[in-house]
Amino acid sequence: MIIIPDANSVISALIKKGRALDLFEWNDFNKEIKFVAPENLSLEIRRNISSILKKSALSELEITELLDKIESGIEFIPASKFEKFLPQALKVSPPNDFPYIALALFLKTEGKEPTILSNDKDLLKSLSKVNVKGISLHKLLSELSLL
Amino acid sequence: MTELRIDISDDLKRKMLELSVNWDSVIAAFIADKVSEWARLRSIALKSKLTEEGALEIGRKINEGLSQKYKKFILSK
Image (tube, rainbow over all chains, first blue to last red; front, top):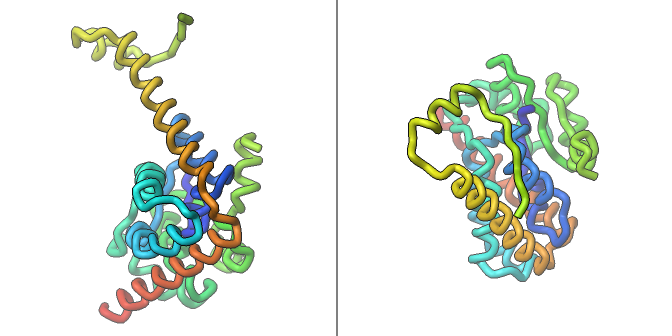
């Protein structure tokens, strides 16, 4: 199973008793999901550390430790691989979500069946236009019998 | 102490036997490290005051920055 987690799915792992952390922990042991993401996602998350610090009240060291572990289970794909699909994705997706759709379209041309993991209803709704699967965290956890 | 049985491929077994390693200790240490690593991460997350709304807000901010980066990438081509 190939899953593209959006930014919220990754950040949700930092919520107290959040279920996203359960998912990344489960997969660290089970290795049943291959997580892939646009490479700049990691950079953008790091650029927003100050917002995470403010809202989580965790230390920068603690946030970094959590993020490092979560990101170690994600393969970050360079833009050069999926650049061809960026303009098409830009047309059909909600304004700020097109990099995930472009990556999914690229993976589909490789014969893979990626699913975008998001709790954003607008993003999930837009996926049917490009024949890309989407799933909410709750539904994924339920499918994996982790709820 | 308790015993743990694991299944491995014949090929992996052959490669393991080529090395003079106490695999029981290696595997036990690996499991202990992994379990304690996640226990530590969980204890960190338990202190977090981040809410679902907060995560959504930060996620949107990250997505905005991410999309700006890739829009610039498209324009540079």
